Amino acid sequence: MERDGYRIIFLGPPGAGKGTQAEKLSKYLGIKKISTGDILREAVYKGTDLGKRAKEYMEKGELVPDDIMIGLIEEAIGSERNFILDGFPRTLKQAESLDDMLSRKNLDITHVLLMDVPDEEIITRISKRRICPSCKAVYNLVYNPPKKDEVCDKCGEKLVQRKDDSEEVVRNRLRVYKESTQPLVGFYERRGLVKVIEGLGTPEEVFKRITEAL
Ligand code: AMP
Image 1: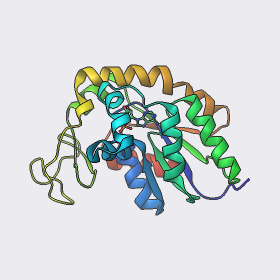
Image 2 (image 1 turned 180 degrees about the vertical axis):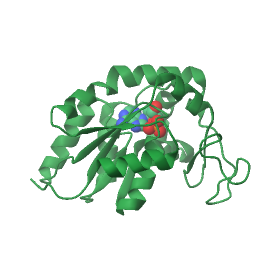
Image 3 (image 1 turned 90 degrees about the vertical axis):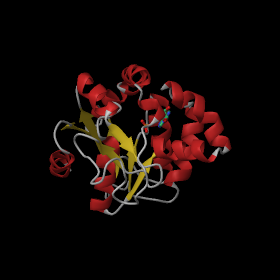
Image 4 (image 1 turned 45 degrees about the horizontal axis):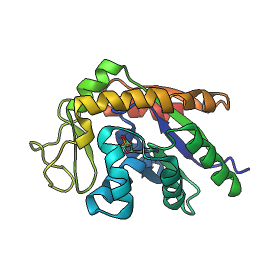
């Protein structure tokens, strides 16, 4: 089994900062970041078959079925030997399939970073979250605002709010997280892979904790 390299999973509730931190870490380590949420949103936007199948689940804050997600991640990982996963796995079934897929390549997961943020903070954070529909950059109007009002620093596009960031859908996403995804913490803890990252603070403060944990 190859133990070198970085095959990192970000775990944590919606709005915990997984996407922001995965992006920073991807640049820092020079390895690919795979965000299943971004891939799905792009597919919905383009109206592909995948997008058509995923849309209704996403809008309600439900999980897209495992068989779709497992095929999607296999394709996204492709021949990469180092990567950061943001938003996958989200169920035990997905985690087990990921293990199978990696072990066929003689690889395994090296780190699981669990972003720890209290529920009340999540709801406030998400209401202030904006994303760039073009380059997928993530902002927070309070903690991490763009330089110019609601416009992307990187590509000048007008920022938008995710459809599933409404309070009602966020509450459902939190429920789904606790029910389906939280059990993965124990699954990876048993393998000694989990590092808990305190998710409060500026993106830079949180990132420093991550580099120290690695
Ligand atoms: P995210 O951007 O990670 O919050 O994902 C947005 C939405 O995409 C989720 O609420 C799910 O509907 C769907 N999604 C993303 N990743 C997965 C996954 N691994 N399994 C099932 N659904 C997913």
